[in-house]
Length: 230
Image (cartoon, rainbow, N blue to C red; front, top):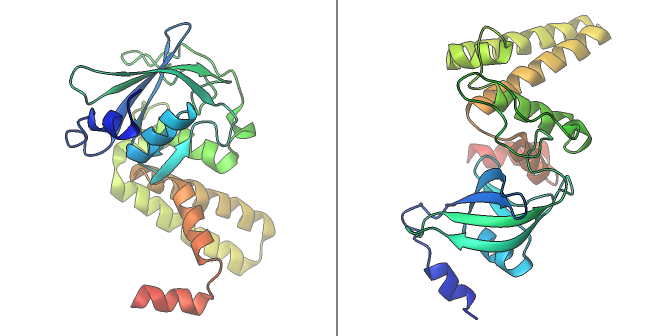
């Protein structure tokens, strides 16, 4: 039995900037379910536990597949490709692999945009409204701007996205000033949506915002502000 160290040494980490591409395949059906990345720590955890762990580039952290949804991936086999720079996992999937609630992440035909797999599970029951909305926004990045408002914003680019954030922030402020409760809620929702579009444009997960807020939770506002100004 090879040691963990000898296994890690087989991988060409320099070639992949220490983030190993991982293709995930159903061990029984051979369906390709998803593609993700592992750093060394994620691979070690996956080897030790036989549950898939990955490194999220948008969230900037390790994550265990199914940590929120319960849709764990039980690893049956690890295969390294001939260039030692890509990994294939054969897994047994609990639930579904895709955050959209579909069996596989590969469900949209590139040339036509046809959806070949329908949702099997409602994602807002798994991830919560904010995370589900954010991933829906990301899915509109390459969409048809004639059919989707979000795709239209991405198509127009950074200036249009940021202009909408500024407009919605002003409208929210006016609603608060006018003390109109329904308008405050409506405009806050608009501001949050367009803020998520801006985060999606830069591929920054809202979870990173939650973590930053959690970091500040034990600090007074004045202390936190002082730290930023140093």
